[in-house]
Length: 390
Image (cartoon, rainbow, N blue to C red; front, side, top):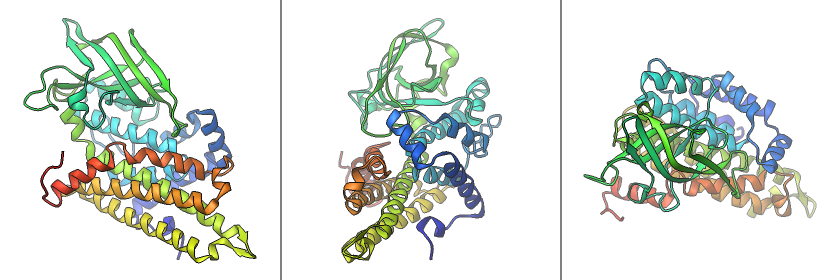
């Protein structure tokens, strides 16, 4: 047998992509480098550029044809990144979503000016949806408005918990443009907004985790946009985002899976080397069972993720399977990182080891991109045919 990542049931293409991503991580994102960036709360421009040059941001997306990359390839890259440079995995979840939205709904000009440089790594994009008063219920709670003018649009409001807004040049911003009819998700439009626009302020927020990627608040004070800034159809922006949610949940699941795998590998290696009472602590049954349970959770989440990614090719079950995969992977990440902290004891709290970073960063996926509780509601309704619980 091998380590969990060596026995993954990859297709030949996935195996090639995994080897390439892993080699870049090994060459450019060693533990000392990751610790330095995490403590400095700095984005790894060198690694991002290398990923772009290797084709791992575009992954075959065709800017001219508006063709998105294969989700089964994206999840491999994200798992490999999250097993090491976790913040870079979070960054690429956003970039892949940007690629998907621009491929599906962008105009020829938007594809030329933003999608093409996004695919080859010259651009990064932020995605601005959530607000202080609304996360899961953002369609009802949205207070950011865009008002139509003769020249285009004027945007006012505030977005919060936005990843990468301080280091990206553009954001895809959702704002209410019309009445919430026939439902709350209607009357919301998506805009491509330059983050250096007059009247726009980006403020960094302090967070306990994901230190290698900035988390921000974006304030819009009479920000003027031209008529070409709208992405897709007016008043349909939220529905456009919903159309991408399967992919976002898959990518979040892949990132959580990578964190779980990285934490499991770290804890297992430590358990082999650390001795107590004259033997490796990994020989003690209680610790061995905890690590074995972690391995089972990792591989169970991997199997569900692969099934969900394959369902993206047209299965009616794709939405529910992606929700299941995200919950399973997030639960694996929080459970395995908790086990890892217990196995490593005081060493788990040390900044010298990555376990404390895995432990912190895993918590993101309990509530992003949707809370696990809301996804369980979705599974109950769609998979089990239970009455709607919310």
